[in-house]
Image (tube, rainbow, N blue to C red):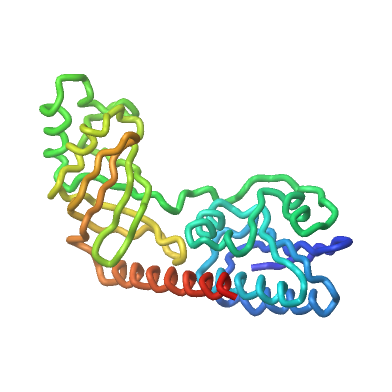
Length: 274
């Protein structure tokens, strides 16, 4: 990761670029200490070009915010990449360190002169909360789609092929533990109503699932999970599925993810209690 300091009249902008993990925490700390010694206590942390950030780095941001506050300064975040925004909002870091879409808004919060926004788009737009799921028993799915209704929904309206042959859905993760995961699904482009979605994802059915662990730098995790709960909603369904086939590495990664989230919650609790 690279850190570029952009001095302004009444504050400084730190532009971070690359992967912000444990190794680079001392670099951020060094830059902050240098600014404080120079009498600059108001800092904007620009995360537009940060495509990965782990729990230790997030914890470091919390500590830096407290350090600047003790020096009568303030830390704010500007232009987070989608990856960073998702993580920051998920762990609640934005309750401690304000987050803004532009450098101008961030500077206004600091009481400084507005800065010119450099433009551009976030380079990392992948939704880290996505859950991809496909049926273990493709023939059963095809049966549900054809025999379970009288309409013409046996053919995938997006890809044209039959449901069940190569189909997969995309949901949004809402919970994760070593034993199971939960996700919501709005039906995608299938035109299914909530009742039909619940029929498709019926209790006891097994699904191949793929998902990411945002705080861990690895690709998709894969497992087989059996549906244990299905809740119909106005906008789709919420599903809970217990892992029935998962390798030790993936289970270990989930365990680490849970530990990281617990660590961040403790850091946030300490930051808001003081």
